[in-house]
Length: 85
Image (cartoon, rainbow, N blue to C red; front, side, top):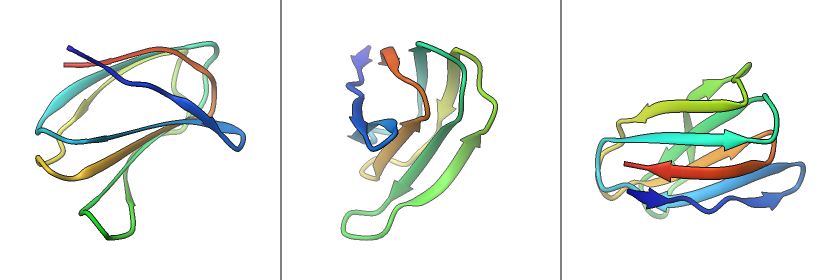
């Protein structure tokens, strides 16, 4: 299991990592709100690949993103814990 670190950027919270392949991500947050996942090949623009506009306070989702891609997870609310398996 890997812990993801979210940092405040503007009005949201963001974590970035390089994918090692398919994974499951679980977020525990201070409140419900939007969550989005973007990915890109190194050196290219990020493209949104998943969006949960009305996500609950705690969220779990599959991140089936090919190994080597750069991944960005954005949360509209504070993330208090985040793990990936």
